[in-house]
Amino acid sequence: MKSLQISLIIMLMLAMGGCSSARKSDSPKPAADTATVAASIAFNADSAYAYTASQCAFGPRVPNTEAHRLCGDYLAAHLARFGRLTEQRATLTAFDGTVLNARNIICEINPDSARRILLLAHWDCRPWADNDPIESNRRRPVPGANDGASGVAVLMELARMFAQQPPRVGVDILLVDAEDWGQSNAGDDDRSWALGTQYWCRHKHRPDYQPMFGILLDMVGTRNARFPHEYFSAYHAPQILEIVWDEARKAGYGDFFVNRNAIGVTDDHIYINEAGIPCIDIIDLGDGTSFFDGWHTTADDINAISAETLEAVGSTVAKVIYRF
Ligand code: AHN
Ligand code: ZN
Figure 1 (cartoon, helix red, strand yellow):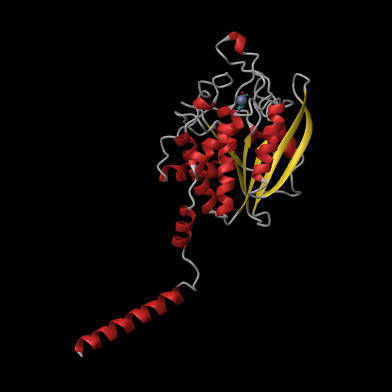
Figure 2 (cartoon, rainbow, N blue to C red):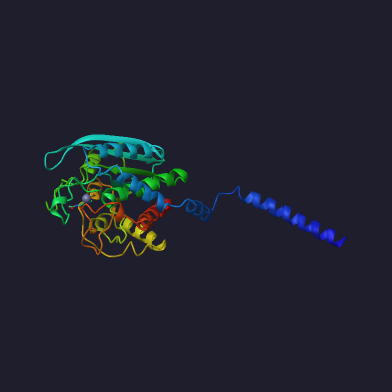
């Protein structure tokens, strides 16, 4: 009899517990629950690596070539699955007079959100490996695994991730063309680089477009990459730089995202900042003074790429996005 009473009491307690927990789930989710859900969809470094390899498989994506056209089609078709796609086509004249058939590819995630973050990378390859140690290679194009494909690959994987687990903010992924047909050693006021970004700044995909900030990814894939504070990033967007480097450190990527000052680079973010959008450049600057070893050489191929580096960058940017 007594044991029956006890089991009745236990059953009653279980039933009440069940009721109260059912009621709890109706109330708004606390921040910790949201964080758990966000963390359950992870940045997949193998997927990012595969996106790097698939771009490289087209051959160098030099404007006005078949590889460029086919890879542009591939990137656009792929991104269209993850958000609202817009493509800009422009004929841009390079410093040497070549008319480039350029394409900027834009994917808007949560297009109706007012608070937005811009993520960008260039997808074109340099037509000449003019930094190659072997003279006869200097007229050949750059394979662009790190200088081109790596940043795009991280953004493709982030787009895939955001489609599965939408962030609270809107995200705009901008793949810019014609970054790398620039004039070497032309000096600081040279505007021959980043032609696709300069075009986008004059013809934004939306009128009155004003994201909170921008993050540029450039050369984010080599094994021993180091991301110190690029000078113009620290100058124009110090708070964003701090947020990103802080997230990296907390996630265990402090060896990649080092808190050291570095040189300034003429890159796409210069024009984004000039257009009034604070923008940082996550760029491999080694000890703070130079690009990676294979920069603008024929050695910038898939063998230079490490999934761990792609993961450090992709996971960090994902954490920043889910924070807003
Ligand atoms: C200059 O060499 C002046 N800027 C380099 C920007 C760049 C080229 N990023 C990738 N390739
Ligand atoms: Zn380059």
